[in-house]
Image 1 (cartoon, rainbow, N blue to C red):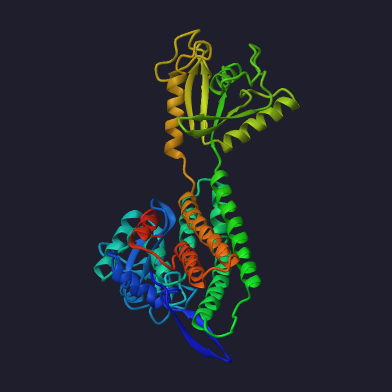
Image 2 (cartoon, rainbow, N blue to C red; image 1 turned 90 degrees about the horizontal axis):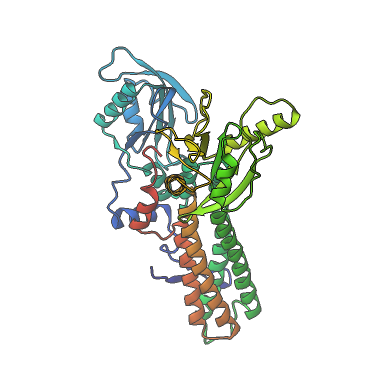
Length: 475
């Protein structure tokens, strides 16, 4: 996107300002989107269920668009439009096609532009009975709404200038978070953990570029808009902030917790031997005496490019003392944090009936001593039988379950941050060598383009499609 500057008189000095394409206004963003993408009309009124499906105390059906209030008013026989107060709910009844009587519901109405999407929004809260919800959505469609596409509510929030792309990706991160660590990272980004530092850097670089452009306009006159030392200092400060941000993004990608597999079962079920066989070294103490493992052991292994954190815990039994009670408590805590549990059953023993914990998969150990049950994977730490199949099963499970809620966002931002750093380094070198200011201005513009692409001030249809197509419908 080309960059031009216009000048205006402000006091006794000329101040350069970026034109509209540099920092898109809300209206310009909508116009740009409408004429450069094939997405549906963002002025349509859309409807979708925004809560989880299935039986529950409450289901939430959301409408957004210019006719949201009219459609909701139609469903309530004209009882709500003039009575809705923003931020408060109105208890009413819905007349849903195919059902006798009025269905109790709470209706929330929010007026544009002070809403998530920047449009009128109505939320209908009712009992989560799927036939009722389906019939309500059908009535909304018949009244003039259309079904929302994946991520369309958040897309409208972005196009209305309510959030930038880093915030939109954080919304998806919160939805997809698989554990507390991922949720904490997503909430931090949603709160401006990436956008706020970028805005400060971008503002300072815009001011610096304005001074450089002003100097170009008055190159034949003895006017200096920014001193060389001050320019180098400001470029260096931006480089330092961006380098720190890049380090944070890299750390976020590295901090994604490995897939955690816990070996559990009754005492002397062969857990420690299997642990050693999978790790490839004698890490766990192995003994024929039941209850040898009192604490838990951890080791990180890699299978087919997938990192797995393997945990060996004490066998489950009735505790007869304080030490065994502590070991049992530690074991239960590890099961709670596990992504997968390998419940080990010795082939030469008959295990008493037990309800397996969630996420547990039963495998047979010590298959060299006796025939394993036919419904279990047979393994032997002595002969190595079944270990290849077990490793393949673990790698398949990890690949199916592994995801970092913010990995796509981190990778995209890291790319733009690195490109911006490269341009600023060239800018610094040009300023240091007192080379032509036109080259310096060009590198500054390119650096600003990378920042703008990161936050979404500059975007393409493909980029929006890649981001918002990953959302579920109703978000």
